[in-house]
Image (cartoon, rainbow, N blue to C red):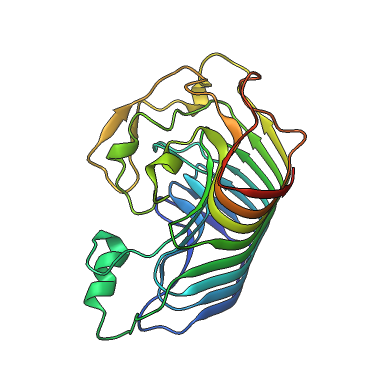
Length: 298
C-alpha cells in the first residue's frame, strides 16, 4: 500500500493504520509527500493493534495545526515494529490541551477495564484469543523531525512493558510558548493521553521517556520562547481536552507557563544520550532528570 502526494484537511486523525480482531496483519505501507492539516493525530498507528503492524514508513510531509504529528498506540496485543519516520515538518498549533508532536504509548488494558481497547477486548474475547499475548513496540526510528510546539514529546511504556530499539535523531523543537503540563492533567481522560503513570504525564521536560530498552537520543536542538506572551497566532479563546467537546478551558497568555528540562527518563536501559546543543529552558536547571536508568553514554 502506498499513500503519496495528498493534501488532507480534517479534524480527527488523518492517516491512521489499525488492525482489528477480524483483519489480517498490516504491513509494507509507505506514506510520503503529503500536506496535512489535522487537529488530532496526523500520522498514526493504533489505538487498535489487535494484529501485527510492521514495515511502515512515513516521510517527506508537512503537518500543521496538529495535536500530534506522529503517534503510535500499541495497546491491543499485536506487535508494532520496523517503523521509520523521516523528514517531517510540523506545528502543533491546535486548540487542545497538552499537544505533543510525537507520542508513543505501549501498554495493554485489562479486559473490561474500560477505554476503547479494554472494553473491546472483553467483547471480542470469543473471536480472538488473547491468552498470554502482550503488545510489543520495537524498531522505531524517527529522524529529521522539525516541530513548533508548546508541548512535549512523550514516549512511554507501562510497567511490565518496554519500548525496544528506539532512535530519535536530528530533532529540532521550537517553542513559541511552553504549556504547563500540570493544571488540568487529571481532567484529561482520553485514552490517547496515556502515559500510564501520572508522573510521566506531568513531567516537565521537552522529551518524556519511560521504560525504553536500547534508546538513542542524538542531536536534539531546542529553541525556547523569545517573547513574554504567547504569540497572537498561537492563542485560542478556549481549549478543549482531547476526546471530549464538553469541557472548555480558559487559556493563559504568558509564554513561559512552566520551565522544562531537556529529558525526563525512567526505566531506560542501554541509553545513549547525545544532545550537546540542547539545554533546559531555565539555565539553572539540569538538562536531564534520570532515575532507574542505565545510560551507557551521555
